[in-house]
Length: 233
Image 1 (cartoon, helix red, strand yellow):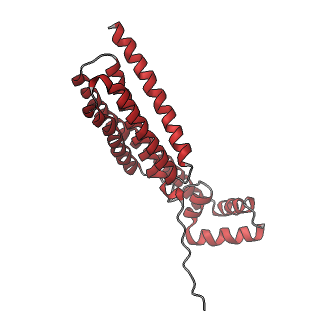
Image 2 (cartoon, helix red, strand yellow):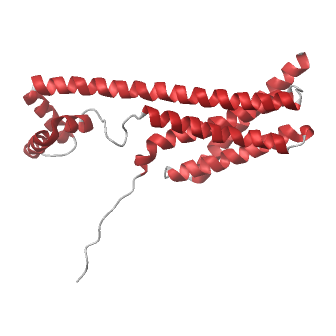
Image 3 (cartoon, one colour):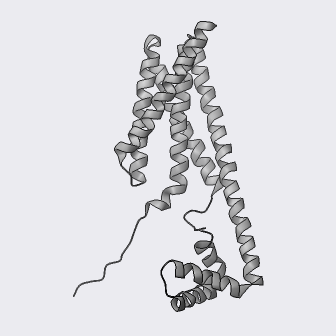
C-alpha cells in the first residue's frame, strides 16, 4: 500500500522582500564605493585620501541605504494600512455591496456566478477583511511591507558590498590600484548577480551580465571624470 506523501512547495516570491533589499544594497555598495575609489585614484590623490574616501563612502552609503529603504517601504506600509482602513469601513457600512464585489472578482477569474457567490460568502464568513485584502487589494503576507527588515537588510548588505573593493585597496599596489580595484569589483558584481538571479529563479548568466555591464559603465564614467578633474586641478 502506497503511503501518502506530504506535498510541499517552496516559491521564490517568499524571498522578494529581503532579496530585493539585500541585492540592491550589496550591488550599490560595490558599485558606489569602487567608483568612488577609482575616481579619487584617477584624480591622482594620495593613498590616504583614497582610503578615506572609501571609508566615508561605506559609512554614508550604508546610512543612506537604511534611511532610504525605511522611508520607501514605510510609505508602502502606510498606503496598505490606509487601504485596509477604507476596506474595513466599507465592509461595515455596505457588506452586501462588498460581497458582490468579491464574488465579481472570482467570476472574472473563471468561476461560475453561483460558485463565485458561494466562495465569497464562505471567505467573508471566515475573515472578510483578509479576503478583500488578498483578492481585491493584492495585499498578502508574502508581499507585506516590512520597513525595519528592509532597512537593516539594505544597510548590512551595502556594508558588505562596500567592504569588498575597500579591502582590495590595501592589497593593491598604488600604480595598479585602478585596474585591480575595477577588475575585482566586476568579479564581485558578476558573482552577486549570478547568486541573486539563482535565488530568484532566473538565469545566473543573465543576472551576472546585467550587473557587470552597469558596474563597468559606472567605473568607466567615474574614472574619466576623476581624471579630468585631477588634470584641471
